[in-house]
Amino acid sequence: MAAPDELFCWEGDWGLPSISTDCLVVLAYAQFAGAPLKLRKISNPWRSPSGSLPALRTNQKETLSRPSDIIIHLRKQKFNADYDLSAKEGADSLAFISLMEEKLMPALIYAFWIEPKNYVDVTRRWYAEHMPFPLNFFLPGRMQRQQLEKLRLLRGDERLEAGEELEKELYRDAAECMNLLSQRLGSHKFFFGDSPSSLDAYVFGHLAPILKCKLPNGKLQQHLKTLDNLTNFCTNILQLYFPKDGRESFSQKTSPHSEGGDFDHVPNKRRKQFLSALVALGAMLSYALLTGMVSIQHAHHEALEEPPDLQDIGSHHDHEDEGDG
Image 1 (spheres, one colour):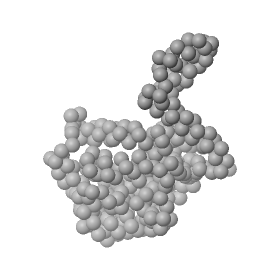
Image 2: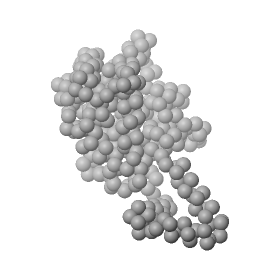
Image 3: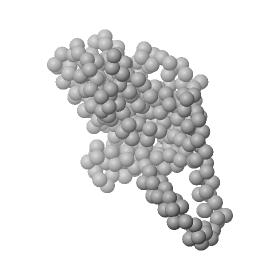
Image 4: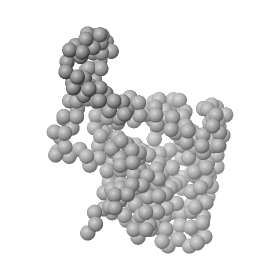
């Protein structure tokens, strides 16, 4: 029997199986379709085969990162949550997914990554606390710049900057999108009958973070909570397909130095201790250089007296470290 595909995702919080919209979409679809994936929840994207999350490593060693590509792959493996949809329902599903990408995703990016208080108090703090050292010092800022570029691309404006007018426009579009989704769902449990489809996965992935995360500027959440059927929709999916995450949302808090997921098993303990020692040694040496405890001129003089091999090795490692950064 072939080994299962491996899905790498951001770990969860706030009662959600993951804090990432894209990861939630993939996780929900896999649950709906019954795909037997080996799940690895991590807080270090550099440990993903693609360097980003989500990422699916197939049993053929192919790596997929975009939710749409992962869903297409799962369909090809006969895990199709849209199997019973009619042609019209399939077209409606694509139309609503496009609507969310155009109207709801920009507001999500703004709320979590651009709005100053939300970003500083919630988003940056979460990633800084959950990422391993030293990535937590620079990756959140890099991710914010990537999200700003994504927002500019979605809006078709290379000079787009945060501001009150932009916020009003984005939140207005998002509210209209949520209203349309609410009208389409009506009193049904799922968007197309009694079984969830890919549209349900996309809606859940976009709305669940809005519903569950307590942002200082919570205008999107305030509007979502006026739409009872959508809030019940998200709550029902969490209870039916991710009950463990809801129960453990308050009892399971990840340590700032933990990287979570399936990587934290006992056989790796010695390796992790060794790596931690190397990081600590590097930090101490950096501190010594920066504070002047070690003289650069004196070190250079001594280096000239050493055999050239030792100097070459040191410079080689320095270049490697710069490349890794």
